[in-house]
Length: 109
Image (cartoon, rainbow, N blue to C red; front, side, top):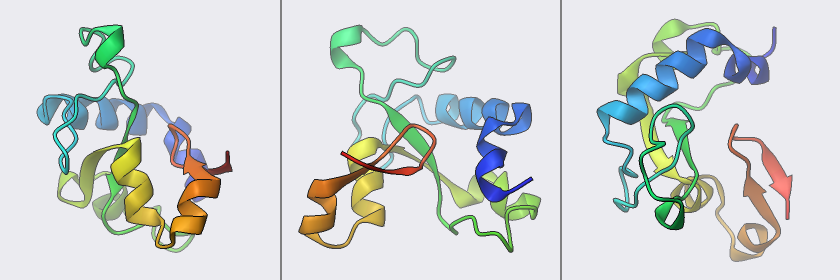
């Protein structure tokens, strides 16, 4: 298994939903309501913004098997996609050309 595969496991999916619910499905940086399947289906469609449970210490090929980094709530942060993109993007040119999908993968717009 690679670090990217962790996001498809039942353990990660349950952990991220529980974490998001513990934060009332609100972005921890801007306070915007976040839609996350299984956690915030009650948010009206017009107010939904996708979000990501972000790892403060980024997952790498060397640390993704460390449960304290991968699953520990002290290392997690619930972010809307905009705040997550700001976390990972440092230049405006890059921000305009790329986004992160709901699994945290970098994608060209």
